[in-house]
Length: 510
Ligand SMILES: Cc1cc2nc3c(=O)[nH]c(=O)nc-3n(C[C@H](O)[C@H](O)[C@H](O)COP(=O)(O)OP(=O)(O)OC[C@H]3O[C@@H](n4cnc5c(N)ncnc54)[C@H](O)[C@@H]3O)c2cc1C
Image (cartoon, rainbow, N blue to C red):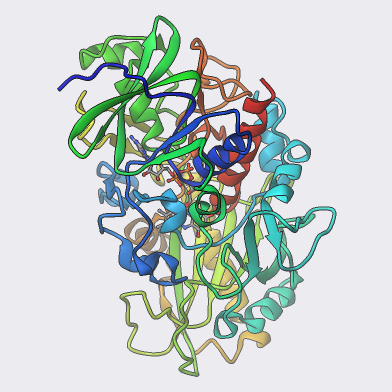
């Protein structure tokens, strides 16, 4: 099937309605003189499980999930892992676990030092503040009045003063706002993007639904972009498939690619933008030889550590409620935390696990992985999944961080403040080094935070410049999780929203 560029002409075409794409579409279309098209492969966000704060678990593997699968991972005992990603209005913000963590100031300072000029913590803080409406109130570091409602853990049964007091007994600060001035070394309540009725606030509900009556904003659902169209090095539009029809749309200014860290590099490569040798091996004509496309894949890994508890509390809806950020690399004091330790005092109702006894769960998250992977094309057919190889736990340093996480969870669990909750360790339960490593490699999994595959920078592996423009092309930017040079120390959605805000400013400044 072929199509020709018709009169569908827009100033800006945004591909993807996830965390970054929705913010960009909202901010650009606030100017009535700009005609903006949003193309989203998924359909409307109507499933009631999307709005409920805990039922997203039921959406895994459903039609709102891209169901992407990694290659077998030697570091995980040769297992392959499903990396769920939202294929629906709102993207992964419509199916995620709602935890809101900006990351550490050192993460963004490291972005700037790596070549992402203009993305230091001081540079990005105003965008984090502009985005949010934090129930804890405004301060030098927190914002109110933005479209994104942020609340402290609302479920009383999920809050754990035992965890917070126990963390204080082993030397950390207590009752901590990790999104405030200092992220690390304080235990506190997790924050969530939910509203006053405990309903999900997604990029769609916060940034798209309220402005869909703008006549200059056109949203097409079920519209999967298959190719970015170019004339020489100038991007002129996109080709997409909707209801089985091949369609095209023309951009007079720019195409903004916000399809997420696993789909954005795929789409660039399908369009001839990537490593020339790889593209030629699949008979894809090369438009721009950019060897960094699909490289630098980083993802967070999660590992449960479970204890038996005394009381059988009612089962909560949220997956977790409390957290602590720590740098376990004692010889590298000045680095951002490499460990996020979440704590859940009772097993959430949606999780399909039963320990046979009341249990509480520490969830260790490896937030500064050294293992780096890649995304490549499997074929030139857009319907084929890409080859995803994150190389999980390939670096021994990553395993050591998880070993330190188990030690820290045990230390916290053995304090007097925690005595009510600790009736004995259920998993890992092991003590020898080999046994612990075996547990880690057999149980670790993704926490769905892939980033970095179209990294921003100025070196020869950078895909976009600090204004998010694809090197060597005109009229194309990437703005989503894929542009992060380094994954932040914490769940990634907040940084993706921030990237959307800053991208919109950069575009409008042109
Ligand atoms: C199950 C799960 C739980 C998570 N939990 C948390 C959490 O608790 N806290 C947190 O901070 N982060 C969490 N995340 C991660 C977070 O949601 C993502 O980091 C963030 O949404 C990424 O934003 P994005 O804009 O890069 O991509 P996305 O939000 O994934 O949006 C990309 C959009 O592009 C669309 N798209 C892709 N390809 C095409 C195409 N070819 N044509 C048209 N449209 C296309 C997709 O359908 C999607 O709507 C979770 C993610 C998942 C999947």
